[in-house]
Length: 348
Image (cartoon, rainbow, N blue to C red; front, side):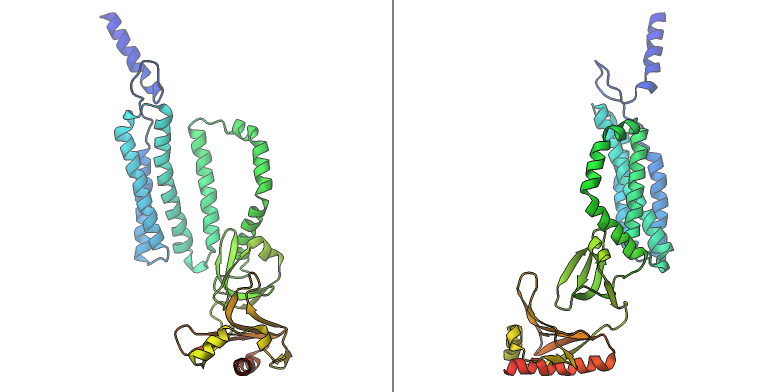
């Protein structure tokens, strides 16, 4: 009887210290602590933030709802792990299953917290979106370091042994890092914002996106040009007009189907004009500079303005886009003479 009791105490005493440890002769591995209660607490806080965002009609409410679904999926995964984790026969598999559930919950909760902070509480400050992404990335890195330390990974040894690899990666990623910091600087300094009209070298258009790696500019020729942020920072940027201003004007001119077809097929040699609004013409463009493809119209530039004419795809008109660097009167003159330039080319 004494030996049986002693053996029972030994078996009982091994339990708390052998969670997740597989020993020879054992069949199942005891699951690790699931942290389900902690996950539920954070999920409830996230739910409260989403409800507040819905009540105040935050612009980020749809994204927050999507992240709430992700959080719920992570909580469900942790609940499943707590119920059925004992069926996992491998200690490593059990650990990975738990960490996967925690990572999903963390991803969703962090997104909700950051969206609520930057796009609900501080929405009136118009904080650049790239800053949201940057804070989120730093938060994920911090979480990864915390969890690695929690599961017993020797971070000091890991960093020491991977120093050479880290240096090689940093060297190879220097251009990517330049684009990253360029994008952050552009938005924090508010050099230009989404919706502004800018000119970078010979490219003029509206900024439609500033991301981690690039700035996207939509031109009046229905092209979207992607410029790496590092190149944007190295070149001169001219802000033609801020969002909401009128940087250029468009007028429609009646045209027959035959005239529209002829306008779309013009070549540079068809343009006989040498001046536009009192200034010498410095450029005539009927093909894309990059690949030589027809742009389906005409663009004429001077040192103080430009115009572009393209046939409409749905109406019997052609559209004239024009911009002046001098003022409204000069712009009106460019528009008037643009019609004459196009008419002479079509009739010639």
